[in-house]
Length: 282
Image 1 (cartoon, one colour):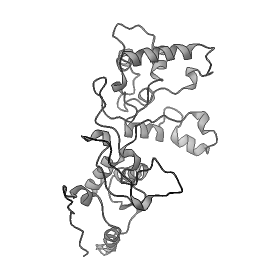
Image 2 (cartoon, rainbow, N blue to C red):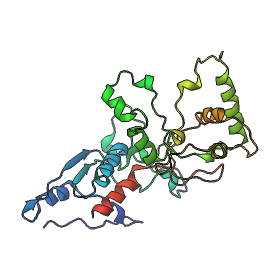
Image 3 (cartoon, rainbow, N blue to C red):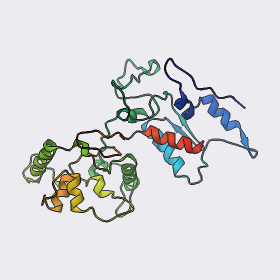
């Protein structure tokens, strides 16, 4: 049986996490050549790329298989750099330099790419607006229906919103200035003569409204909408206006709620889910 590489030390750290999560290509090939009950352990699925989407796809394929019998190989050229989103970690400085000399392309500009496990989900801002129907008119009907099927069915948009935390509220951006600006924007869009020509009927409800807790499908009460919007309990804004104002909230992939003005320490990244799936498969 082939021997695995040991955990490798640097001047300051021992690479236990990288060694647990990753294998060399040769180690992966050697594992497929092993036999169990006289049968080879070939891979059932090969995912090309372990970045934002590849890592999520691999985790989803594993956890949705109730038998956990699928062998899934994720091929990623970059290193294991961070176990979490950079804003979830207590860095004293900025994000580490994730560039590698072997991925430089002098003739091309790839300023946003991160060649590492988890990809740009390690540093992204979490902005996750859902496509409007008119933005998908050229897409195949089967794709549009899979993303957003007719109610009460839920598609991949709903699943993704729950997975990354977009359906939660984000009160870290609340404050008197935010509430005043939202009120002004709401009043401007309510004006039929607004220069944009946009109406609230053109906008989707916030994911927290469209995709409520699956265990409690009842409509969200007005008191909770006011709390999410940072409005006082004495506020008498009609429900229709509350829902319209909630359409103006930023759909951010944040999976926790903190005090106003503080960023949550659970910003979505694909890496923790991949580590979880790896641990379950071990």
